[in-house]
Every structure is written in C-alpha cells, then in structure tokens.
Image (cartoon, rainbow, N blue to C red; front, side):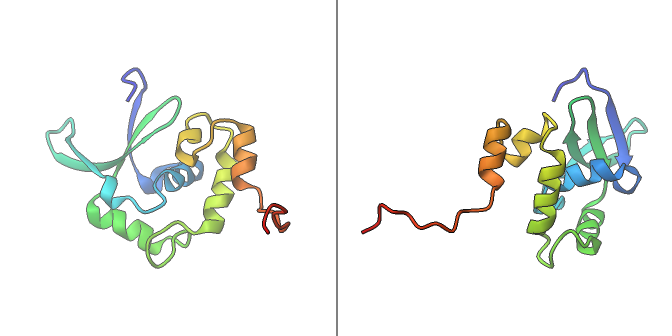
Length: 129
C-alpha cells in the first residue's frame, strides 16, 4: 500500500458505480474472504474490504454478513457467488485502460489484452496428423 495516497473509508453502497464495478472485477469470487479488521478513529473494531486505485486507497466498510448479502443480492454474481463471465468480460473491456487494473485482469499491455480476450479461432491446427 502506498501510504501517500488518501485513505477513503466508505460503505459499498455509497461508492460510485464505476468503483463498485472495479471492486467486483478485483474480487470476482466475493468479498467475505478478503475482509480486514482494524480499529477506527473512535476506537471501534471495524471490518472492511481493501481496494486500491492509482490515486486512492479504499477501505470499504462491511461486516461479513453484509459482504455475503451484497454478493447474494447482486445480479452480476451467479448463485455460487462468482462474477458471471459476461459481466466480467464487460468490466475487463471497460476498465482495461486503467493502470492499476492491469494486475487484476492479468494483462501487461494492449497486445496481451487483445490476445487474452479475443475469441478463439475455429481453424484446426494443420500440424496434427
């Protein structure tokens, strides 16, 4: 974590749609197993989901039950709590240009992106005998 970045502590529902989508792409298998715990400035024990962008470090406040409920009630996730493939592809396309997302979606540059997410060819390999 870059300590020079401003820290934002906020509820998931209050985040912009774009940040929510980027969080979903970062955590496609749900949030509950990624929660961290800390003591807030009032001395209360709080759990949150960490998320970092190029310019901010987010702690998205949520309990374990809230983390599960967000995924359960979100149409972007399937019944097993996994981000649906079509949604994931949409988000990958939408946020591929963001530097900090390249690690999340596993690409190094635009050529890698096109190679990784282009549709496979229907042509058969000529080397097979």
